Amino acid sequence: MNHKISFAGPSITEKEVSYVLDAVQNGWYEHCEDYIKRLEKAFAEYVGVKYAIAVHCCTHALHLACAALGLGEGDEVIVTDFSWVATAHAVAYTGAKCVFADVEPDTWTIDPDCVRKAITPRTRAIMLVHSFGQPAMMDEIMKLAEEYGLFVIEDAAPAVGAEYHGKKVGSFGDFSCFSFQGAKMTVSGEGGVLLTDSEDLYRKAYRLSDMGRTDREAVFWSDELGYQYTISNLSAALALAQLERVDDLMQKKRNLFERYDSDLGGIGKIRLVREREGCRSNYCYPSLLLPGVSQEKRDRILEALRARNIHARPAFPRMSRFPMYEQRFENPVCAAIEQKGICLPSAANMTDEDVDFVCDTFLELL
Ligand SMILES: Cc1ncc(COP(=O)(O)O)c(C=O)c1O
Image (cartoon, rainbow, N blue to C red; front, side, top):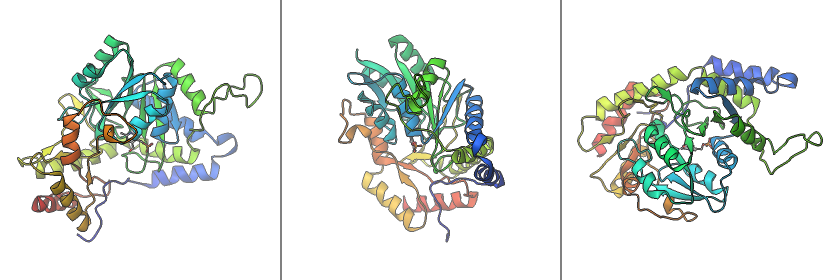
């Protein structure tokens, strides 16, 4: 194959171009926030929550969620051990401590039994991830949260469109966060959104995202140490156009996964990550485990794929092993995924033939 098969990448049409062009040409003066407001309204409606704040990136949304919930020194937050490190760093920025819990082997999302084991009198919140677009086990997690009086933050960075028992992910927790970073399903280069159903939490988070500005005693008055986390109108224009195409973009991802499933699903040495019954994944990053393969061999396969212009990725290392964190639990499922997990390419420009080529090459190397 003489073209590069990218790991991820967006689908950009005339719609995106026209929205961005309009934002550049007209999105100033009294129109300088038009796309931001439209994006916030559309995203909240799509997920089915009341309030949205569009921000510069999902990491900022996660941090705002932690800060608005008042997490800080002396608090513990139970965090999935399997994620991009933004999930944990956002908690740590507040001074709260991350206690890392294992995931369950079928969907790589946080295991409610491991959450229960990690709860102490200091626990204040659960930070879960809808990993690679697979919905986490929300019924069990929300029950635990209620039983122990814990906040729930959904890191849904890659999971726009995914559903748990007919309800969109991002509509369960006190806060949820999505990303428009360039490798996600709906992109704006950098961008993110914070959602909540609570007016009080919305107001707190909004003020923090806007430098703590209140205008209370004077215009430009600030009442707390806030952050400059707002999104630009230009990025919002791109994100809005993508959101308006979200059903098509998700169908494309699901088609790519179906093709992977038909090529690789029947092979005993490979365990594909599939949506759980009653759930709908957006298959943002189709992934698999090679149970019988060593980490060295997994890495050699990835290197050989790269040499043939196929960009697959290893799964995340456990964040609990990073030098700034503490490992309270071994988390064996995350350990196995760290060593034997692979994410397959699923860029929006891929064809069925590309998937077949990836699979043929992968099986030959395996
Ligand atoms: C699970 C998860 N959380 C958070 C983030 C951070 O998103 P952003 O790059 O928009 O800050 C990512 C990005 O890849 C992610 O995958």
